[in-house]
Length: 253
Image (cartoon, rainbow, N blue to C red; front, side, top):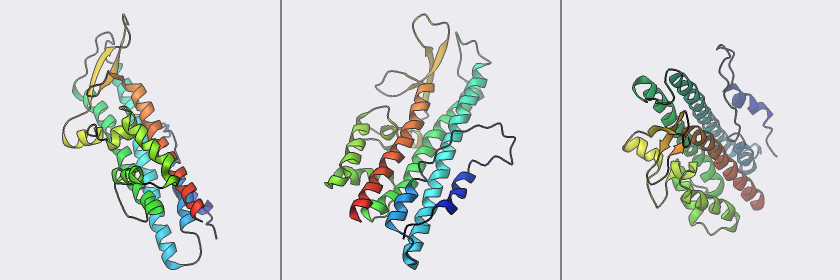
């Protein structure tokens, strides 16, 4: 018997509830983590079996946590745009100087966005690893490596997705999980250094400068574009992996 998910929706919607604040914060909503629940329900249907229900409840909690982590990522994205705009309102944008608390606040939200994104993926890995491999893991790195090493034809699309994005230097998957070519940006933040930011002319003879992200061996990346693409990429990782899980489980049934 399939589970009725209607009663679960409230908890996923409540993370966006703003009735206790002034209502001025407008954060993009995402439910890509909640979509995982459909796959969890396929593997652990409502059959009245205690062990099955316990497993569902455990993975439900993980899914809800991943959903909350994504909200933290989106909250960091929202505040990045806010503090960046406030900082730049104090600058002559022909010669902006990134320093002091303005620099610190921008770095805080950029690095928070990246770390919460990886956090969300690692929590989700517990769900994905169970659904496909019947294993327990709290590392999306490990999960993606299992997919890439698998010869299961049902995982071929996801396998190719991870391979392609692992070679793309600015994809969220590459930046969060790394590859054989280098360390992930997430690991650099944790173990080595801050994100590197610098103002450059947006185009030749421009009257204003834009803030850019500096990554090793790459041309400077416009920071606003990077942030937008990064968030979309993270949602894409969830979407693509969940879709694979759903098809994989339906085929097994």
